[in-house]
Image (tube, rainbow, N blue to C red; front, side, top):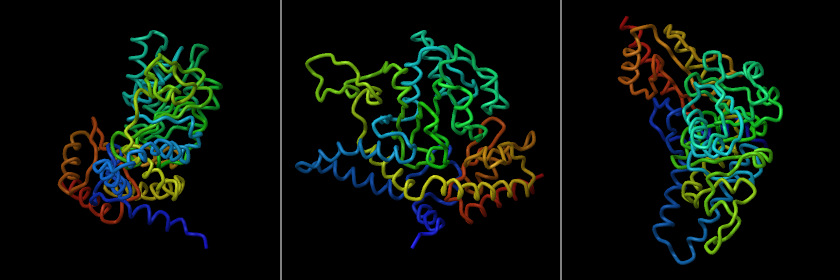
Length: 376
């Protein structure tokens, strides 16, 4: 008998351990039950170091790469562990030659990687994309891409606007140029064709709920051929123990390693992704969309302006509120006083909604909005 989709989501949601009122997955995702159990088990194994037990840690790298492969569609041998998104993007930008088209409004992991690479090596040039209020679209890229553009870089989901980029559409307009995607704000919760990209970098400490120190870099064959592994250490070679000679980087994703990865972090990341693969990102995205609708409906009920997209094809789990001038402090105080965890930046409040946003969390949000509205 086939398991109903809701049953898979219910089981997945049962693995969330955070207190009600938590709407800040865009900042950090509290560890899932499976990840916590994995972390405790790995720590126990390392603390005891029983005879022969340490060899098991070597299996966490292929396990993690296989888990990333199941979610992204990239072959496991084209995936390499990274400690976070930023490290993967640094590898990509420092290895590029030519112009890199990207918005200056992207999260600094992208903009600083491109700028630092340009300043240090003088082989990549940031080309600043003009956007529509921070939204990077295929049409804008089509109008601004030139013969000097070697790569286009974009966030899968913009951290400030919550806008979900059209990765497939961008691929169609850039031809065989490299497409670099910072996937951290959507990885594990949106069903997108990652294979349309040449470089995908993400960490696991946000929506994936795997904790800090988890991440990966996935590279297409085209990216492997065109991106130089500038930072490539002993772990990035094919030699088992490269002590007696200077060996070249491996040909492939492995080259983008500096040293041995954190095996316990890999285990946490794998555990989180294995849960996601069971239920499927499409089902997770659908469930999150329903909860985002409920949050938007609440904001509308209390006349709090929603400045993030309402179009389901243009959003993931982020809802951005922008109260009227002079009302931001009151809104943030109301949320705080009712135990609702969010992020405030500039003139906006960002709510990051996962499948754990149940009735109790929505009731807390309603209470906060009620206090806000009654203070007028």
